[in-house]
Length: 223
Image (tube, rainbow, N blue to C red; front, side, top):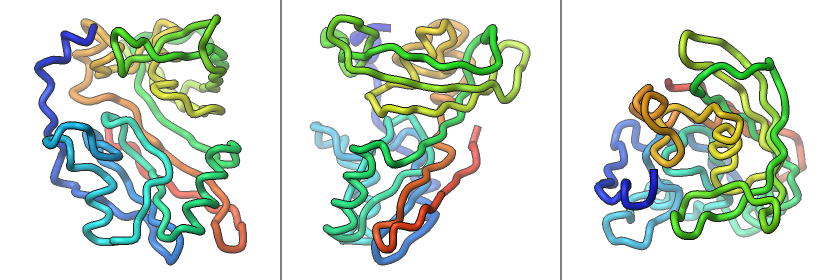
């Protein structure tokens, strides 16, 4: 699927659920992002609705720390003050967080677990798509394990060590098992197999900005 195939895309984020809150305190706001909702506003006026805007309607001090792809659902953390924002930002930058995703992929991986170590770079003529590039790509590492094998698909748990754009989507595609319902990287039956991108941020573990205790937040898989 190239960029022209996406020209008929209309941004229509879900209003229900609007923005489920998993946890809130003086420093953290943890939400369960609905699939189909942008993390931050897009350039076009019609792309203004996003996690950031919805969060600030209820919590004016909330600040974006990291992003999930529009089509990805699941656990996302925001900071509630400047100090927490700095603290959390450094954790993501220094890979002190632990993120776990669940995906339904097309086909059956030959093994029950493994890792994918393939460098990624933006595919500029077809942006925002990404691609594997050994010459200029940035290092990207994903570990994975099979959870359940079905007739035509397989449920896997994904453990990204790095946080490149579209990393999990491109890494699974490179294995020959695109995530079903992926309008950027899946085609034919793999695209039609789900009415949404079957990728969910199941859990996020990090150090609380106050005291440094390790905390984990979880969201059940909605598909």
